Length: 455
Ligand code: TYD
Ligand code: MG
Image (cartoon, rainbow, N blue to C red; front, side, top):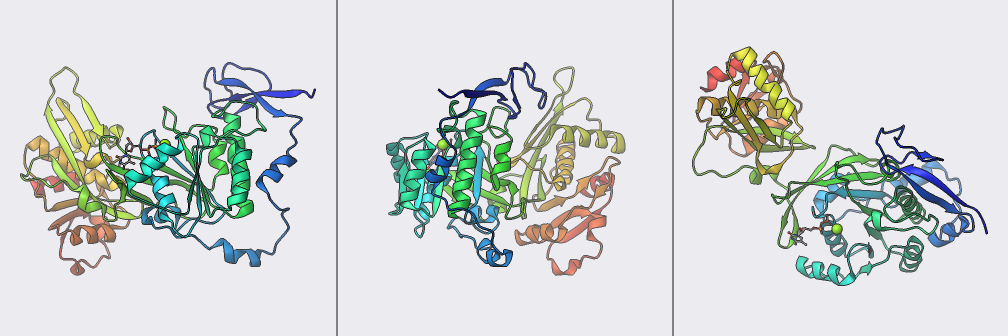
């Protein structure tokens, strides 16, 4: 009998060690090392080649390759096309990661059922064929070219794929796959790594795009070793607040396009709906105008979005005042409060402050600062900011309002949606022809100046 080689690997970062250690020297986590059988000597790697059915690679002239490399398969889902950089590249491996129940399987099944030109194989290790067919009925989609395969052993999957020759493969999920070349349990670091690289070889050698669904750990990172992110060509993060219906698809890595793109969906009874105009639905339609509510002109990904920010400033009930922020960085909120206190003399020290970004979105654009500051001041003074005003600017530590990128796009978006005034940094309007807008562009340089103009 041949010897079985084992290795200890960190379940957090994938670091390996020949013997067990208590604390991982690479990521610093405690008690994450688990023994895994590396490879059984009696299963030659050459078998894998047979499974995948690949031909030997031969050197090719770069000029000859280029033509097919730039070719992309455009999908009916425009949001997905957008985040992938204009369509899916044949032979690419795409990882879709997200919290449980966020809608990863729904998104992929919807894709599988809506590409009539492609033969799709949907490999599911999580749900039974009946469950998937129930979901498909719920989505109201039918397709003649979609195969469901409930299998987790990779060599069996490859056998079916070799026979079916699909145009797109979807794996739900990478954590359920099991390679026969690795002895450890599905979902362990070495299994995930092995299965992902087998999938990558299949994708590259047959020029078939493969989409992998991946789980997320409690801490919010992609479950499995970091190498998983290195193996795949594109990493898409599917996120959203479960209490809201909006879902956002972000690119965190893309070998074939930009990572600043963003896709927006709305989860409904009939599945996910693409949202092509985010501003219109992100703005809450209020009957009455309240203090503490302002509109920010932000850009997420490449798209301008108008987002409502809400602040509530009240007398602190307990000894130490509370600060709470939803959809906004708490430390940034504390910084803005300190700026208002120090530079403009507003006494927030004795107040509870709550901040909320409407729609359950998480905004990363610093241009939202100005709207946040105005919402805080508006609630502090209990004075209403007219709902036809919009704000776009970053606030610096000395209370100065700083320029933000692509101001032209932000102003145009607010203009298009019928806003009357937009407040921006003085520095960002330099060299801008303001006559082309109907909206009044107001340049402000200091927080104090903004306050005087508004209240
Ligand atoms: P699912 O795709 O199973 O999530 P994941 O694969 O990421 O774990 O999505 C499940 C959720 O989506 C579930 O809570 C129900 C909801 N949902 C709808 O609201 N409408 C629908 O049409 C479908 C199919 C699901
Ligand atoms: Mg699922």
